[in-house]
Length: 266
Image (cartoon, rainbow, N blue to C red; front, side):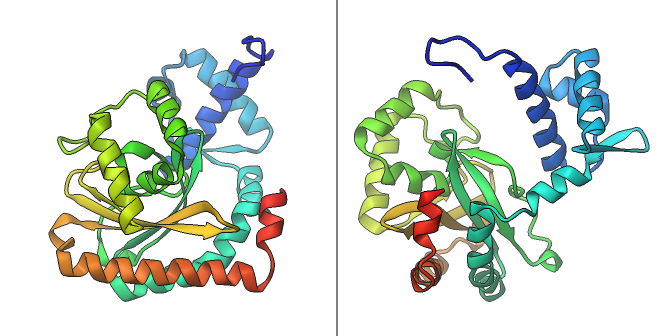
């Protein structure tokens, strides 16, 4: 978080660390103890305690038997009427139906700060398919199907700028670490209209994603994740057809109600 002159705004580090704590507690989905926060975020225990205590005082965190959970203010803000919530409200019925038809995990992702932000996740909890990502988590765009959709929507100059800033780290033995290989994969995405992640982010898990184009822009993307053993050619073809139909239906939903202008004006 830097100013135009390269300096850091006063108090920015404390704000960033407090937000790191809030996000970490959110994605864990279970009460988190102070030592875990301190170790995971590499914060001195006193610093972590002081920031967590401030978040508790402002109702962003609560204390449950000595551990931290989301507080009422964080929950209220999460349920507020925002641009993202409109996307969720319009998309949810279609994505829930896609989950029902396939029995696989369906994700809705946004591009935020050069990473995929998982805005929504739909699954049948009775299937015990395993947790691949949680709502609110982030993933690198070079190692995920959702991310490749966003890379394909960028210009070459934008991608080159991204490669300069982003080190390519191996998440699995299948992660693409060569920029030439990644560019060839992106070209395939442009030609086919969908992206595939073959165990590049998580071993044993494959993913397929399509863009959601609203107002002529790739506003977000939709993906389906499943165990690689079920990621057969026949299933891939079926998944692509379904996700493309879902994407078009959601885009039509916005067009019919003329809400895409609201999305791009806020």
